[in-house]
Every structure is written in structure tokens, then in C-alpha cells.
Image (cartoon, rainbow, N blue to C red; front, side, top):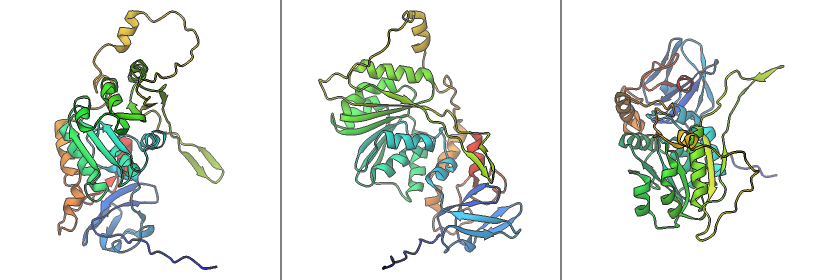
Length: 363
């Protein structure tokens, strides 16, 4: 039998972001630069010991501590990148891509770019033949997302565009009716943009909403039904629990990634076709007007739903950090990381070193 030719693995090079993991599972992300050193309180590792070698190696620091070296996965990148807004967790972005059927070549519209985590997943799914157009109300978040996306793809993707403005106002002028394949809504009040979304979506296209609270979920689902433009919406949430496996000591982890948000998916009906009505069991007495007002009344704000709002000082710092790796690639400078990044986590004292484990727990 003819053996396939061995394809040499791409070696790690200067300017690349890598992840170091110690025996206790603590992770550190650094950007490789010639002549630089990664510092921990138990020893040092010279970047030159890593540059030019393949990933998957083990490097020992001057204190005798071993570190595994890998390029970060998408999840690793998302949980360690600079962010001004809460990111869409990988467990949710995975469901959005798969259950929302984001396919190569699709035209995707996104409302609420945040820090760019979901945009990265969408861009990878549509591939070079598709496109993603993000709409964001806040200029600061658009800049942070642009930096993170360019960092992940080693440059600004040609098939990604961001517009600062209200989707309900901007979308009709950006796309002719019936030309968008998928719309993903990561915003406080997704029900307010349904008229523009239903106009832009092609028949059979899908709208996917990501909301944090039960009232938001209820209001969006009812708005989808009342529009008469979509199939019966499908609502869900996902929870991920890791397991500790060590010989016969096999048990669930004490901590888990539980509720992060609800997903709602619905398909666009053809114009003139009414969706099938869902058969329901008879209910008791209808809700009183006071109950309905309490449920649907009032303004939905970040503080009202318990979302932490970044301060202006933090946003300015994150805006400086996002995308700094590309700006500094190839430069002969002592600072090889993300500018003013705070060093959080054990041993993260080298320039550009960030503890991913620490950042995940911080949320």
C-alpha cells in the first residue's frame, strides 16, 4: 500500500499568538517575538525556544516547570481577547451556526457586534464566498470588534462589513428585499427590528435571536408569531457541564457553564403564505391587563436585565488593546502584547501574557 506523503506542520513564527498550559491546567496567552521572555514566578521561557518549532511541544522554563505549547482554539481566543461587551459563549455561537444553518456562501446580517466573538464564528461559517454585515449602535464596540476580528484572521476580512447605526433604519438601504439568507440578533430589544428583518430575509431564510432573560424571550417569540411572517419559533438554551475523570474517580465538575442566554430560531414564510397555527391545549383564564403591563411594560436596558456595563475608561483601554498584535507584528519592540493589558492570573507577568482561566472566572 502506498503511504501518503507527510505534510510538514506549520511552525510557530514571530507575531503568532500561542497558548502555554502548565501542569495545573493554568493557561497563558502570549504573542511570540524574537528576544522576548515569558515570565512566571517559577521561571522564565525565552520566545526564541518556541519560534521555529511546531505546536504540541513541551518547553521547560528555567525553574523546571513544563508548559505545553499550542495555537489557541477559537474558544481560547474568544475567552482571552480584549472585550468591552460580554461575549457570546462558544457553546451558544456553535448552536447559532449549526441550528441556524449558517452555510458557506450565505449572506448573513448581524445586529449587535459586541466584542466580535459571534462575528468570528459567522465569518468562519460563511467562508470566503459568503459575507457578514454587522450593525452596531455603539462606535466603541464596533472598533473593539474590528480589532479582534482582524487579530483572529491576521487582517481585516474582505467579506465583513460593520455599520454603526440602528438595524431597523440601516438594513432597508443596505439590502434589497428578499436578499438576505440569515439574520442574527444579539440585542436588547430584537422585536423592534422584525419588520425590517422580515423584509430583508429571503423566503426560507432564518432569524436567530440571542436574549438573556425570560421576559425578552417571551416578548420576541410573541412578536414573531404576531408578525405572521415566520414559522413557529423554536426556543432553547444550552448548558455545558464538564466531568472530572481520573481513574475510578469519575464525577461531574462542581462548576458548570449554565445559563448564558436563550436562542430563538424561526424561518421566513413566503410572501402571502400564513404560518401554520400551533395547536394548543385550552388555557385557564387569560392574563389580566396589569399582568401583561408588568411583563411587557417598561424600557429594556442593560442594567434592567443585569448586564454589567463597561465604564468609559475600560472601553478606551480595550479599544487600544484590540488588534494591537497586528500593529506590532514584525516591529522590534519590547512590548509584544496588547499595550496596556492588565496582567491578571498567576504567572502572567510577561508583556502580552493573559490568563485565560482567570478571565473566564472573572465573568
